[in-house]
Image 1 (spheres, rainbow, N blue to C red):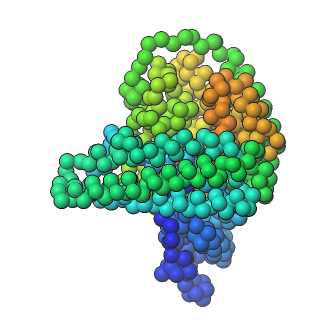
Image 2 (cartoon, rainbow, N blue to C red):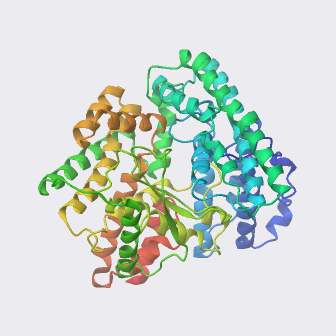
Image 3 (tube, rainbow, N blue to C red):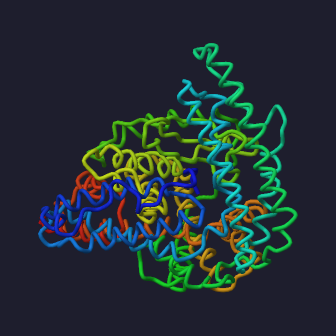
Length: 558
């Protein structure tokens, strides 16, 4: 969930309301399409991630209205690029309408992501990378205010959920409570006071004094009490009413809800049982690959991980032109994740803000317990180059694309199977790029594949096949050689975010299949650089739409 403000005006009052049908029909279809998708972004973005009933109703009305408008445009006369926009826009509206029929707003608290944690991570980052101007601080104060509103609405929604039979699994709330307790403690070391301590010297009085007072008031009198209110509600009122079950299927409409999430995450009509079987077969295949590699040697010594990843970045940039004709102009920074980094994640990519306020960042887990002697080459390829950063930066730099394609969907997400699948596919290119030079690197790449394959088995097992949490933990420990803490953490993420983990492997399998088809059909004419350019140049999209686009491209190449 993001931090968009509550109480946005109803779309019906928008000054950008569509023109009468007669006037619209007088406009050529390509221009009508362009106007519709631009107007959609302006109307939909202010409603993004608002939990109020009015905002959700307004969102559904917007989605239905824009779907009707797009269906009124004849598709056949459109040129290829406009058809692509038409197809992606139509699919997203249909998916968003489907998603809004399920009450996700009644289950707003997630111990892994969400506004409180997002805000805390951003505040922690300012210890090393402070805000620079009074304008930046004004936006930060607005973000705090928005987060407080979100938390109050989250409490109201959870109360409603208790009355309607929609409550979170107890294990998730037990994991969330200590996080909220720490974030709500009014102590000098609280992460939310970091922006106050790092006011730049360039901001002078009286502006400095005014900002200091405003920041202190916002944190001490609004944000921290809001977090404590959320914590106390969960502990006293909500926790006793939470459910012991972990499956989404245990909720009203849960089976169809999960099936809907699966279709959106994978871009396939496959059932959870189908995906479970695919995952089981992939786990067996990848484990055989791992067993064919020599046993890992013990590691010794240590390395500065930030320096090591900077060196790896340099090596990767030098290797990429062999397989990629187009590279993004935008760079990314490499930063330590700090105390709020995910203990189970060595690397985490955050793409650049749409307004350019923050750069793209690769966060490196440097916390105690990490393995500084081991540099995760496969993880770097997956999260940075040629994975997430290369894909998202190229997309953001396509200034000619409409905003919904260039910047991503404003609320419910765009094309997860493309984004996550491309990232895992990118990690498979390490040998071709000359970066997997030893067995340890190859083992790391296979392990990344295995983790995503196991996710297919466990996610569907938990939410569709009646697995208990203990079964999931046991399976992960056996297949991934995790300790109990790591298996617990991974399992609870699957519980908290149903179907999200399916995008990775299912998307990667599709990318591999599409490349194999292109190699088979084009033969000697197949060129990695041209193929990758064609895949990435139009941004993320549903994989069946990508497949149709590539068929046209392959026919032209032949």
